[in-house]
Image 1 (cartoon, rainbow, N blue to C red):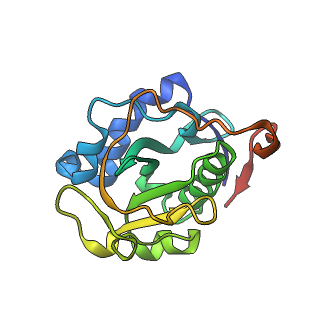
Image 2: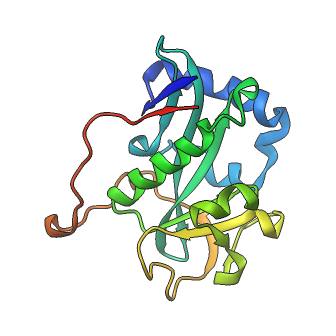
Length: 189
């Protein structure tokens, strides 16, 4: 099975909530991370879909702005893949692609609440070990953080809060900006 990762298309937005219900259940919105996302739009440059050659929708990943005691960061999630297609590399491809896009955009810190066995291979580590706290219940082993830039967590600690809606992309001096990739990545499974 082959698929392509593309920026989230306008029509994908109507497909994401039902996919999340199928993947995580209807009570998913009671979780702490949903309080951080309430009334905020996901970061448009970090929303991607996995699609079939015929345009069929296979999966989605989104990121949201958060704040760690005055330091801007991003929250990964939700990541969802059609249940019948899970285990075929679609989710991992979405994570790899989107983390690279986040680095390219200049984001420095990424937080996720998810299965440590899934996210540790991408470089996520326990967030509590870095002095980070979520403002609500969470299983400590599922609360993880990744530096997208070396040393980004140095001196950063505290409670994670909601980000500012206007935080869309971090601007860096031209000399620090990586070259932009052209086109989309294709993956096969």
